[in-house]
Length: 411
Image 1: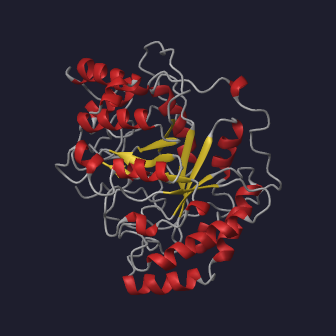
Image 2 (image 1 turned 60 degrees about the horizontal axis):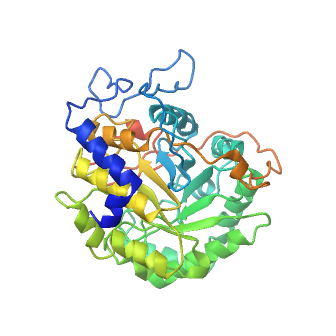
């Protein structure tokens, strides 16, 4: 670990937590229990008889006096639908009142009507965002329909050519209008995430030039909608993957944040290697600094190396040192810390390091920073319910009702 990491407050806390919590016989938090079949993805907080989960209790320890003033905005991916909003209360209580300021969800990528933000789909998230001025709504936006359709490169290349010519502009204009109408014009849009991989139809590799042109068109179209204040987050996978992600970078004028999805993989990799590998964590930080952009970690978590305390320790210290705008752990098995019982030691460390954080003093939030009320009430419509599509990657897809109930990804 670097000297800077060791000096950081979180680094000191994490090391202490590692010594106290992890060396002991760590067990899963009592609020998380597997179902009768032993399904690791079925954990739930004890809930009331009525609909919706209750908030899990904290661990009983008094909150620490820490604040989030110099810390990344804390988030987690818990569920893509309204349940995700409810689960954030439980996560906050589990962390002894730490404020979960980042709400992160995905638009379904099965059809264009859902990518446009179908009526009813984003209402709960918009209401959550409007409730407090310091909250951040982060929305992953597919750039293509049939986004997990495993289309061949030749077909993706043809789609990118059509996209670069403007054929799909109207879908993104509709999405921008929808978000403004919902009163969330300052949403962070993680557009075309993990574009350097092979999982998604919106991948960059088949034609980086047309992909860049398409990104630029989308941003131009969405920024032209009156009232918008969107920020666009360019978030590749860590490392080289199928194509080096700088080849996909569309330009500083159409990117507001440079993010990175970084899971603990492949098997056997050290954190030092995750930092130093080509297009890895250090390259990402340096690239963003050179382009004068803030960084983010929209997706991160445990994976191929299991319940890894070293990964959790180092990743938390890394983020504390480099101060991303926000971070969002993927909280379902095998990646997670609260809704997943298979990572008890890393989970205990995460909890010890992040418990008791409070949001900024309301007096410090500039007047008028809360988003406006919706300009028009949305028409109630059924929530889109696309069929799940299996994927070999760790990215949570919104095509499953709850990530906790998704089949575990291959390990």
